[in-house]
Length: 277
Length: 276
Image (cartoon, rainbow over all chains, first blue to last red; front, side):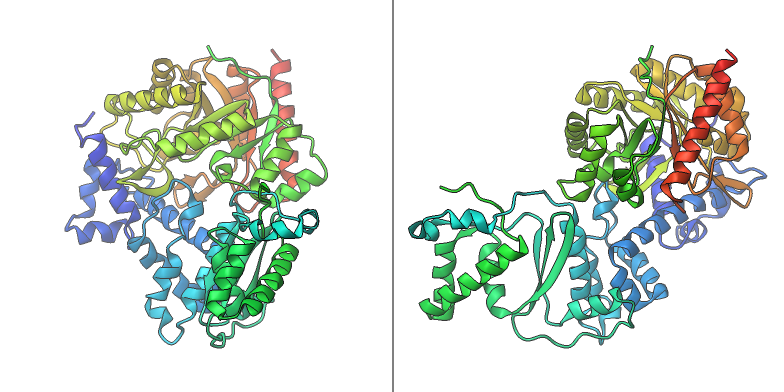
């Protein structure tokens, strides 16, 4: 046997070398260590050197996560191209090493990272496209919920409508977007060349939600977005009307908007079934 | 001694096969699922798992317990695994003899341990805590490895045997991993299997591997190789009728092809066992 570092120290050295961005040989060089410095830690033999052996882990680390990021962000990857996406992932992992035991969450910070990345110069919408893709990943496996059905409302006495609790299903997210990134998403999905999205009207957003087991999204404009922002934390139909009334300065307009939204959300199966009072 | 459930031969439940599995129940005895993929609140994965569980026994196989890490055991992960196990009532719960995180960052890989007394004591203590939390024995799987640490003071099979004894856990013998590691480190795969104590092996894994230069890689992207089938025969002769899984993850073929591989394992095991 040979003496060696304690287990925690061995794991620290191993982890740093295999998760470094440049491969084990260069990571050693960056630390001013010759390749044979590894011989104190890892057995060399005729099959493969210690560096080659450790590089197996370094490559598996990077490419496994790259594959997951590509699967989570296929539209972003299509827009920027393979080489740029590879480099983006390299930088991303340095800035945001995975902090959750499941790979499911490894890409959670990519929208913010890409928004601040040089790739976004001249393409200020890349972060929003990524945010849309992440929202789709995120609602895919959020908690199930029973849906509020139109029939359940039919049984509600008109005077009790104001107290009807309104909350979205848990598998729901609203992505603010200054550009119509849903158009770019759709073009790539259809196999077309990714066109830059047009700037969107003020208040534009993309609603992402799961209906049954299938993830959907659709663009929403300013008025519905306002209503959705009231819906997301949970409200009542009366509360929604009152808040919209304040925002619009018109009770009548607010009531019409709330009724229109409610009809749309019921059709979307966006609302969770409350326990009615 | 371990109570080995008479499960027969199973395959991994993979997202690409969900629709086919639910549409026409394939002739397999059970499914193994990667626990981590189902430790989510809802949606399609949980729906499929419930449907599959109604028809087949389920084995929970994890990749992130990180039994060998010096990071603290992840209490939230353990809680979620315990909750999943309560719901699924799996026939077996397993994870790997490896580590996967350091300083709170995850490599999402099955990283190898040095085979030292220090590492052994560390893993024994963590397996005991996991078993205590889950209120059941777990199986610990030997991984494929590409490095050997100079400071190791015992062979991998000695480490595994001591772990099983001291933590009173079971072992998941991955026959392909034995083959891959034996090639990569130049040890005798059959001698390895002969040194694993009878009565501790609760499951076998079989998988395909690939070659990178002089090294073999555990890639789960091929059919089981002939040499691994031969080693499987050797393992069945030693350990008897042990539940056996075909693992296939990358370059995943149609469900029927994976099932065919499982049927082959069943036939091989039956032939070995019939010879007594």
